Length: 208
Image (tube, rainbow, N blue to C red; front, side, top):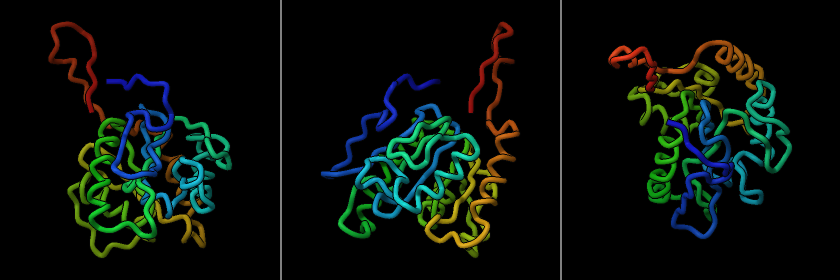
């Protein structure tokens, strides 16, 4: 099923219970879903677009290099097959509380399932832990972001590629991520099954 919308920012009209928030941004039918923590951490408080602070743009630069967006320095970059959103989309006064995360996660989850991406790209420890726990049904211990960075984890309908927080990149993290994404993009990464064999004619019917 395809989402029909011409809206790049907040295509599903999310309205969380807060005065200011940074909504999801990008292609509503994207195969890749970039998942961040919260606006103060990864950007968007001023621009209204996720990952538009200094650290976030380092990551956007890698994604631009593999063709998922253009002009990573823009406050409203053009995206290609990519959607970006936060676990906690509300702009908080400092670090969000545990209760606030719980309240915000329902909006994130609804948007994630509406997008229906094939590849989840969680950024930083909190987002990675959340995605692995909720969308892979796996437990990873010891949990080391450095070791998980740019690796593939098969989930329950999703392929997950964790990304270490770009504010902590101090080595070859950008290159490792670029290589991992280029390798993935060169394959058929979609997790689909053709159920057309159950139909009376020869039509195909792909589902995730």
